[in-house]
Image 1 (cartoon, rainbow, N blue to C red):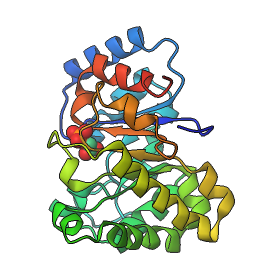
Image 2: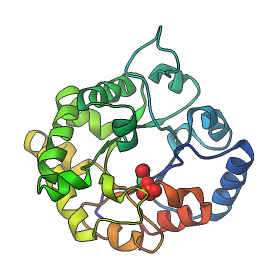
Image 3: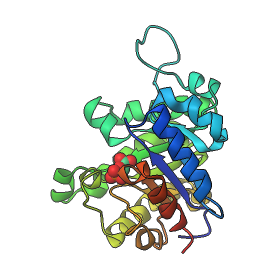
Image 4: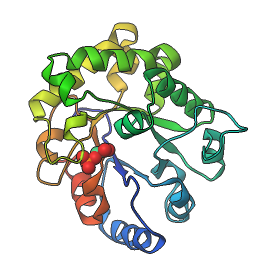
Length: 250
Ligand code: PGA
């Protein structure tokens, strides 16, 4: 951790119900006193208004956004619509979108731009697969994913939101990248941004995602370039999410 304010985002993925979300929000509100990190809760689209009933826009996020502005795109939700219902953040380029919906680096970059144009703060995900890591090329893969984003929105655009490193092999698998492995990647990503934009690179929050739990969060967050987390499975239990948020300050 550094002088950058930590950012911890919950990614509920396709989970939740009105009743369960209500209970989660109540438990979170009761337990969140004194949390110093910036907190964002990213729900499925349909629950964004429910989140907004209980949280300020700066704490509410969606999990995806359309690369298109409006029109004949059945099933899509635009950045302007998200803004219109009071959403403040959006996750872009999650590996589950890249994998199951064939999102390319260019598409992820365009979605990031759409989010920024609408005044949303994008949390942009990059990550390598197990195959890519075992081939010894994780940094090359990550570097081209990041380059596509920087080319389209620049370091200043990315700085409006944040960058999330999510090794695909660690997501929902119980397998976490070690703090040292993660630190090495975060430092490399920051160095890449630094080449063109030293100021934004130093201020950019780079968070880690992939089987973060209350037990492993403190050691991860103690690394100098790990500025928080993007939390999937463990974010479904409010008490665990609170414990992970608190781990940014120990
Ligand atoms: P996980 O998911 O914490 O369940 O590994 C992280 C994510 O996909 O954002």
